[in-house]
Amino acid sequence: MTPEDLVEIEKIRQLKARYFHLMDQKRWDEWADVFCEDVVIDTTQEADTPIIRGRKAFLEFLAPILEGVQTVHHGHLSEIERTGSDTARATWSMEDMLWWPPEAGGRHLWGLGFYFETYRRDDRGQWRIEELKLRRIRVEVDGKQTFPPPDGAT
Image (spheres, rainbow, N blue to C red):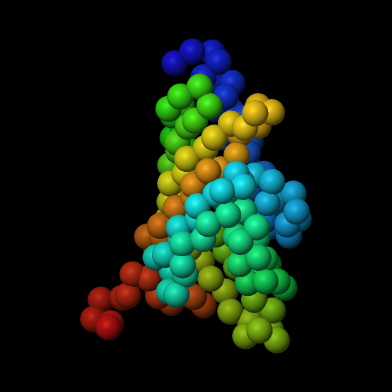
């Protein structure tokens, strides 16, 4: 690994930090800018969630879902590898917590899992998320495990 690799890896870490912070602050226009225009989003592990293609489509999908919801997203223990001069991939351990307002049911979700991502540097030298795949290993809603289904549940 070269010093240049370390600098570029740190830029990718900063990009992912912006992803989390801007989403939790609902700064959607700035948040959308962390993605390539042709980003591919795969959260298909979640019920009824399609693969989403394109930055605008992802913004239009996610922003209404999180309207009025308090969120905290964390990324930990990143493993980032440059795969070319302008490409990279990473695995992030993740945790998220979401609180819906009373008028929307007042539920609380706690999730754990991994982000699997690829990145591309644009012609201005900015790293952006090219592909994001979220895979959860555990989800609790209101303190009860919902994923994977508890033993004996169907």
